[in-house]
Image (cartoon, rainbow, N blue to C red):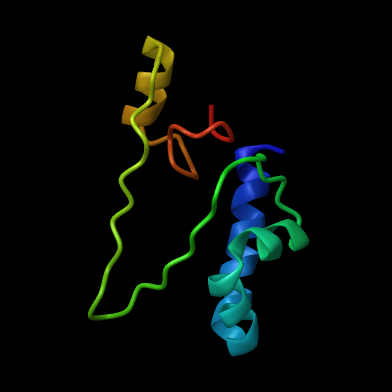
Length: 92
């Protein structure tokens, strides 16, 4: 699955959560199960967390520090080419 497909699925999940309070509650309670059910191929052994931003609380995600980046990886990240996070396995 490529970054574009991931973006489409996550966009659909976000829109569904905005429209359906029950779905949003399930997404917040068990993100991995919901994301898998919506079609994302999640890596095993990884925990997923969903948080909701509000007007009073905004979330800044600090990605894990990459272990080995090539010059090409750094160029892509600096150029803003990533639609997901710039460093994850889906985007590289």
